[in-house]
Every structure is written in C-alpha cells, then in structure tokens.
Length: 248
Image (spheres, rainbow, N blue to C red):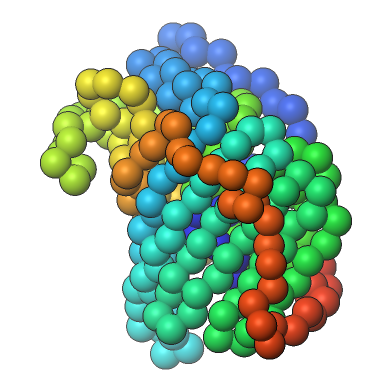
C-alpha cells in the first residue's frame, strides 16, 4: 500500500464522453452531474493545497468475516509536479515524495525505500506508480481533469440530500456504474472542498467500500524545496519496486 492521500484506483487513461442528459436518462440527475463538475473543476484549478485524510477500508478475512482497516495521513500538492503524502496505519508510517523527476516511497517499519524516475506531472506519476503498488481512490480528487473520467460509464446519479459531515452541512451525491459506485459530500456554503468520498466495489457480492474523510484543507500551504525532497533516514536501505501487478 502507499500513502493514503495519494491513491488513484478508479481512473482510466482513455478520453471519454460525458453522458448526454436527456429525458431518456431518468436515472442520471443533471443537478448531481453539474455539482460534481463544478467541484472537480474547482479542485483542478487549485495551484496548491494540503489536506488531512482519514481512510476506512472494508476487507474480508478468509472466514468471510468483514473487517475495517483504518489509516490516516495527509497530502501536500503543488501543481503540476510536486506532491508529498504520508500514511499512518497501525505501527506503519509511509511517506511518498514526488519532485517532478523521481518518486520515492518509504516504509519506516521496514526501514526501506523504493525510488524510480517519474514522468513530469502528478497525473502521469500516479499512472506509472499504479503498475507497481496498491493505491487508494481518493487521488481521484487530486487528478487535475478528473470529471470526464469519473463520469465514464455512469448510468446513475442522484442528489441524496443535505447531511452534516464534521459539523459542516454538505450536499450528498451518489453515482453508479456497473463495476463501482461512488459518493461525495460537498459543502453547501463556501468553496466546494469535499468533506467525504466513498468508493464501493460493485464487482463482488460483498460490495466493499473505501471511505475517506478529508479535513483541514489549506489552499496556501507553506512549502519549500525540502518538502518534496526525500533524504533517506540513517540506516534505511534502498530496495527495488515490486514487479508490476498485472491485476491493476
């Protein structure tokens, strides 16, 4: 696994057409689509930001019993090619650092790091990294032109209503396609900075989800070149990336 704030997960690289919203598309609410586009356009237009992220991942034991795995962390982004993410899960701390030329993942328990040359943008870096490690879907919100990809294959969209997330009134949207569904909660007032994001796997009977809460948005984070420079801790060893995962 990699930094929880730096996950790709559900995006495809191919260009797609946004569904045309006509009378025959009664399951796709134009209001939900419009608010999602407004949100993703706003996020894509940010030059820099940081945020705190809390993840709850549903998984299954071999017995079939469902368990919940928690992780927390944060991400700092300076577009187009700087990113730092941290992830804390139990006793494990992981760091991902991308400086526009190289991407490095460090695991403090193993005292080991992996590094490789990376493409010149955050989006291309995610795609390169996705071949090697498991990543979370919350990076959909980091992707600069995410809206058409999120809408790929969507055949259901609905404004669920207004709910309070972390003390903030939010509009709850839900979207579905045959293989997965996602939900997003967007504040009703102020900048459309998502408070919660859920992706659910429709491909298995268990319908497992990854739930992400996003707080402490900062649109003018304090950064320096050191923020995106990885210096191996004393005693850390360099190891190769695993072989590409053909299941991704």
